[in-house]
Image 1 (cartoon, helix red, strand yellow):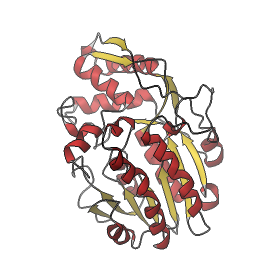
Image 2 (cartoon, rainbow, N blue to C red):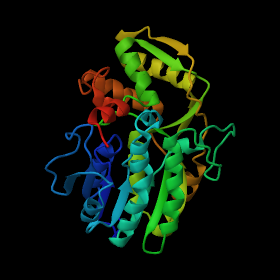
Image 3 (cartoon, rainbow, N blue to C red):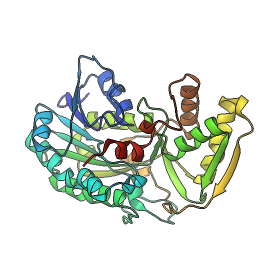
Image 4 (cartoon, helix red, strand yellow):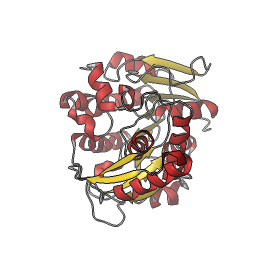
Amino acid sequence: MNAEIKSVLVTGGAGYVGAVLVPKLLAAGYRVTVLDLYLFGDDVLPKGHPALAEIRGDIRDPDLLRASLRGMDAVVHLACISNDPSFELDPSLSRSINYDAFEPLVAVSREAGVRRFIYASTSSVYGVSDRPNVTEDHPLVPLTDYNKYKGMCEPILARYQSDGFSTVTIRPATVCGYSPRLRLDLTVNILTNLAVNTRRITIFGGTQKRPNIHIEDIADLYVDLLAMPAPLIAGKIFNCGYENHTVRELGEMVRRSVVQEMPQLAPIEVTTSPSNDLRSYHISSEKIARELGFKPKRTVEDAVGDLCRAFRAGKIPDPMTDLRYYNVKAVQAAKLA
């Protein structure tokens, strides 16, 4: 642990990544406060842990923000209306949470004495690129409001960087794998769910390149960033991915892995349909390995295996119908304004 950082506010801490990150932070000895709307259920964190405080609320509420940030040394900002299809929702709702609320959160964090601010952006800010390796200085070419607003927040955070307020932006690849607050609307997770529960994988498009990262690896990175010396990360932006594959390759990897884990499901059919989702990019994670020494340890196959074991153990009830697994449907059902 960094001696200066003992207490951490995790916005969106009951979400997909947060539900894996928060137990890791607690295990590392941090005092953790989670600020979340709990749209996907309130049973995903270790309730009763003496170092965990949970606050049900909205990051757009300035008074609640000030109260939540009191005594915090660091912020890990995960809260957002997440993933591109979520902008089937009211665009003003998504803008208000993903963009309008961002600068007030950063400003209040610095005023409150927070020393470190970790922002979870997204590698989808690159949109479409035919470069063999997209580095952090590549132009941002947003195709949706989601990745546009994610990218627009990055220079705002950079303006607040100072000696006593270290900021770092992470552009994660598409996250995959099991979480207590599971999402089944992300590429590898979608394909695994289809393979296990319909014995048929449908590939939309197929030639698009998509980078991926295991959920345990991205959560480990956020823990590591809290302990790193400020000069290593201050004001910097890092891609974080592990494997770049086409969607068709991902489908074949999922098929093989599911058959290996659950041979009784074989054969699993793979079909292809047209797609209007054109996002395609091959990110480079050389900078984060070179400057921070961070290299993911887990593969797409590991993520599929984890999901298969969770299905077998009955940890994913009603995977095709429960709204909690699907961000758009869950947010629509919550009737947020």
